[in-house]
Length: 284
Picture 1 (cartoon, one colour):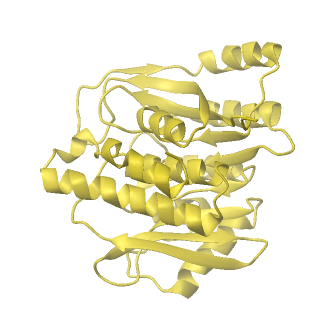
Picture 2 (cartoon, rainbow, N blue to C red):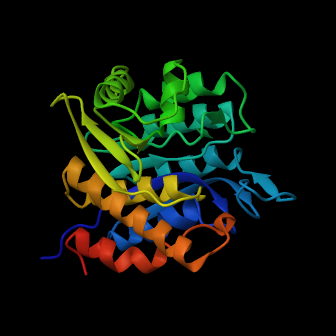
């Protein structure tokens, strides 16, 4: 008898060009065998990293109507996965979505996409991290980078290299308001290596997944990592195995892009890595 297909609700923007947000979350979760329903928060002609003159259509007002229709259909979800949210109002609407659609076994994953390299994205004011921290308190799993973690905790951001005590302290503080698990990206202890730290609050233990660091800064890789991590978890991998699968998939995407000398604004070549990702999940 065929297994019931799992279903995730993904709440992200659509950048029509540039490989990030929903245009990477959808194919990656689909490759993991997960049915993916979407609530787009905005539609942009391109992502905002390195491009100018992009179009932007705010879809905040559509979110409540979509939710009402779905409730009338009795839809349920095995996971709720949120990424870039463009305003305080969207934070409140997504918080309500979680309340409305969370079942007893629903995994709520929040990627607090709002900052990188020590800086908040230009679209957000200084009070936004505190609002995002409140949303993260509702999550089962949070997937911040080191900048986002520092901002939500109200702590100064520090460039690496890091030590394990420092990273594990951050992870414990991220989980203290409510999340059962946290995966922190951008972690490195020595030159040439980069990856993540995965922490399970119940076990009180952090595990690390690393890969060779490739020079440069690449757009959309946070969305690729979080989507690959969630797909692996929904397919039954342990947190540490899911983290390693997501690191390997993301690092491979960056390596192909670097070797092809592709304009980094265009996003990374994750598509060619999907068969290997599926094999790492025991699929395909």
